[in-house]
Image 1 (tube, rainbow, N blue to C red):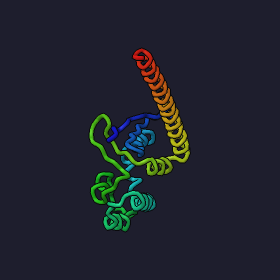
Image 2 (image 1 turned 60 degrees about the vertical axis):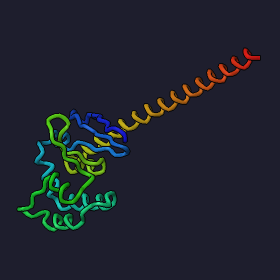
Image 3 (image 1 turned 30 degrees about the vertical axis):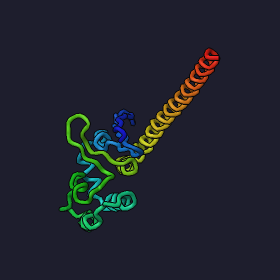
Image 4 (image 1 turned 45 degrees about the vertical axis):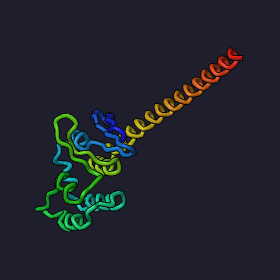
Length: 177
């Protein structure tokens, strides 16, 4: 099992944490919200009917264990003044995999799959979303270049080791004759 990798990007002067696990990247909504206010922005975003429909469709596509019944209950109530939804309540009720809520002073916060985080970024500010995507792409390009260099380095080491091994065998064979 691969370990979770933590990175940060700077979007318009705001440090945003990204957690990568396997092929999935989760971007910290809490860090994003700090630029515009506080965590209440996340709760306001989740109250919106369009947001809930987006979250529900994303989960139905990516999460076979998604609880569609609970989603429908939330969807019907969304937009009403009495409706309040937190990330933790969403995760527990629907078995969501697209949003993660982590406790703790360091490393805690609300994280969302990059698809969902970009949607939140758009809700905060279209300009912010574009800069977020640009910085995220830059980070991924740097990671790909590093991986490519690592792969080429490993390939070269294997080639050199092979040549050393063959030379040793030839030397041993000629010494025994």
